[in-house]
Image (cartoon, rainbow, N blue to C red; front, top):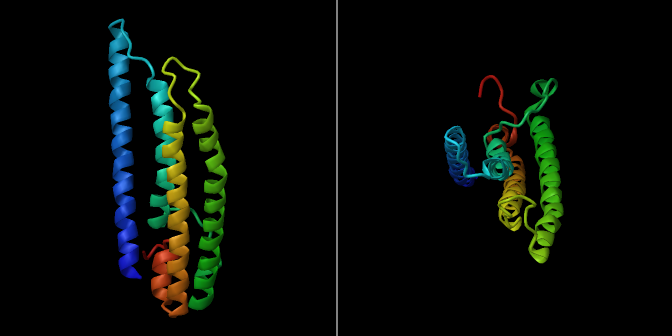
Length: 178
């Protein structure tokens, strides 16, 4: 289980680094655009492209936040519960999150599918084929759903093995001690 979790963390770190690189390139693009406007020229499209980048990195960032246990959870009572009950509640939480993630990914496909079917383009000077940014957006949703489901399975396996400390480290919220 720990090898699987290590692999998932590595994959999500790589995705986060790629997303960070995309933001950095977007910032450079915007700076160049600002400099060119001051000189009386323009590339154009920096606002459109940065919007697409933001949508894409957001969905890919969901998985990184999940695997690094950065999602917000309120745990006023959780810390006072015995380990088996705490782990069970964590499993319920990650399973519910996985269910929502799968639902969002499934419901996101028709958006992308319609853009592909209709050869939709942005109503902007760039006329970007919408399937391109939507594919990045939707693939991030699918990745998030897959990561949430895998974490739920890992958590369930750890709980079945009664490895409550490992389950807490995998699917529980971070505490002041961790």
